Image (cartoon, rainbow, N blue to C red):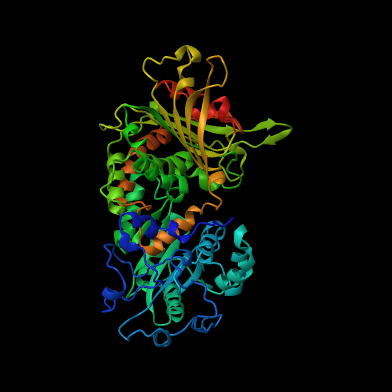
Length: 593
């Protein structure tokens, strides 16, 4: 993973500073909330559980997380010893009163030997460390059933770490410093004793500081409850905060999701649970509200009066490739549409929130989901890719994957039409399309505007009025971009019209790399910012839209329409769009790349 070159102000603390000026501070560590020094040294905040104030040195000139000669020497015992100064030593060094207490964050990656941890979580943590966005005092523990030493974990993690292009001169030094803060503990996921042993190790590294603990559950959902039970009872923080990041899938339907939520809430409060959907951390998705609410040119157009349809498109140009066993249990609707695309839809369609506070934003998203009609079978097309030979190369079909059961009816493609029953969006079709093994890889939001009434130049476009339709395209990945299709005169003596793009291509406009979504979301979880995480009632509303459809598909054993590997998907998707007088925007000749 190429690390982002974005500065830490991309974190929620800096983003929210638009609404809360007090969030900007040059202090790396907040004193203990009950300290008498709190009032005079740190501005008050309305957010709960903020024991840390994390700010990058690039913004405020603060002391970096990776210290240099200016910092007092640390006592680094590689396996099990104290890391860093004791609380008393540090207090004497910087002149704190005895009543003041430092904070530290312990991050435990549960399922540390899995692909997600190796490819995404550890690299994202290193990216934050590289940007000096992690707290001054932090420790990372990997936890899994695999037997492994600290050195073996560091070797495994080091293979996935890379440094950004513009700062490679200190890459090796940063990497070594980061790896020295990574440790490993082997244990069973349902063993309170093993988590108690982890707790003992965490306390050694916390060194008497105020302990804040973050657990990232990079494990299958069927063992979420076992881990949460064991961790909450044996290794949660007694004085600071404890937070748990939960990866999707959050169940398979309304019932299993509700059962999972009830199980988690037996041991955690709702504000301790961070349900992660990494698409919400993508730069262009987060930019949705900025684009709409801070640009007067767009907000008045954001309604049924001017928008003809909205398309949310997800496509991959590869198949399951050995992951068919996992995928077959969920399918493309559960894997992509019910979470990623629906979350983008809710952000796109929500009303203006009262503020940028997490609860205000999530309240508006829930209102959108509750205003939507549950999906009907006639509003959905499903497909499954089949083997196809192209250019002398044969690409396997879905059921050719040895990990997929023979005769599986699990869809690898789905298209759906959804509607929002409120004054802003009544009658506007929101078309979703998601598929594997298609002709291209992309994730886009396409907003097609209505035709110009009485268009003076309609003769120049012939009978195809869609050629004259304005379209706003937000390309989430790859090659992030925002562009607006407009009609323009071709230079010359004649009256010839052309469709042109007003294009903001991020790679051309911004020299820095865009942060990976996991970097942003991990930083938000550490800071206690929940704006980009999913609340339980939001999850319930999302499942209520899709559960009846999923049951009907499975009970009636509806066979998916086959489409060739590397094609544009099943023909039925075109007929679905045509039912609403819509043409998929990504299939025109100008959109083939």
